[in-house]
Amino acid sequence: MINSTAAPAAIQLSNLTKRYGDVTAVDGLSLTIPPGSIFGLLGTNGAGKTTTFKCLLGLARPTDGEVRFNGEALQPSLFERLSYMPERVALYEWMTGEQHLKLTRLSFERFDGARANELAQLFGLNLRKRIRTFSKGQQSAMAIVIAFSTHPDILVLDEPSSGLDPVHQRHVLDLMIDAAAGGATVLFSSHQIGQVERAADRVAILHRGKRVLDGEVEQLKAEVKIIEATFQGDAPALPALDVNAGVQRVMRQGRLLRAYVRGANNGAMHQIQAASPTSVRVLDQNLEDIFLAAVGDR
Image 1 (cartoon, one colour):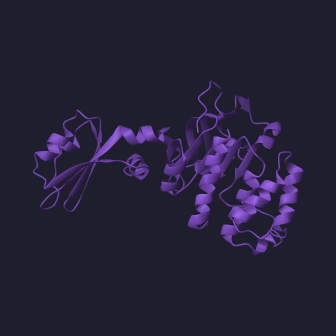
Image 2: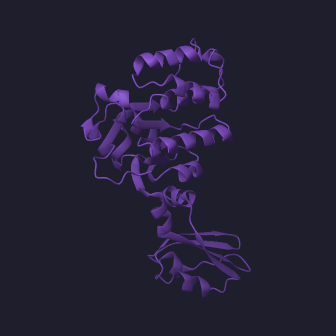
Image 3: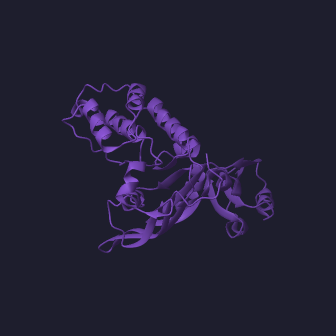
């Protein structure tokens, strides 16, 4: 999905900061998003994801920092090449779906009517109905149809699967993957970490407005292994394990102990085995493990 040829970043955020009075919503955020990639933005509620998107697209003025698209500052000529789907979909409720597509055709030279009708059929939308009769999920699907029917170079999607059933959520992931395969760059947020793991090449995790982790998904997953040990009684306290610099964190629940271990030669396995567990196994971590480790204790 990632285009490996040398090129400016599709999206470059440099020290992006946004304050609302005494509240810092985004705090010195820097991100580099390669062309042709799918980049997932993760964070708890209030982490700064939506504010980041608004600053990115000129809907909110940054307090500090800058945003570049393919090396260019945001300007009206770029809007033809961008598609944005906000978390709270705002469609004209008095319009029909067909009228909304006609409005999109007038706004975007790249609009593809055949593609829009194909996507509407994929999501089961009756375009002759007024938007006010659509469910929340159908309105989200309509926004997706609009976003993907203009053949954009860059898609910015804030919770694009919100309100959709599992089948249509899968359609959204497939559309993102297909768009990236065709050279587009996709930046999206989601509370459904499994979806991010399936689709994204790279992720960044935000917490309280700051970037706490970012990188390629597969590389992040490979950096830390989970040692899972089961004991006959409650999992014991292991002070040496708790202070081991190679151990990211230790979790205990009843008879189960889980140690998140960075690197192989740090003595963590020996420290656990010295406590005589009844079983030990080494597991690969998933993106949810990475997310919880990054924000869980902060």
